[in-house]
Length: 117
Image (tube, rainbow, N blue to C red; front, side, top):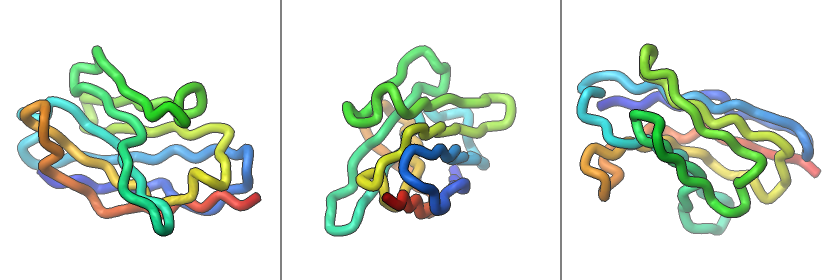
């Protein structure tokens, strides 16, 4: 499985961005997809996740109410809509895929999100 993330950029606080993660290859075995981020001097953390079926989602507490994860299975794309962005959301965002339910096996390259105050 190959993952290609895109959509990062520079935005002012309060603005919005939509990240996309296109999956290719053996996507039939994907169980869930997730978005992670790693800010300057911080550890990588999971921001949101969604099962490939779309029946379950997970959000980091600080993302609830502002971020929405969704997927387009026909196009094998997972989106992360980020609204009301804050400077503390500044990070490199990565998408990942899990086939077994307990291991993030595949990773895309990061996309930089910078939120200015």
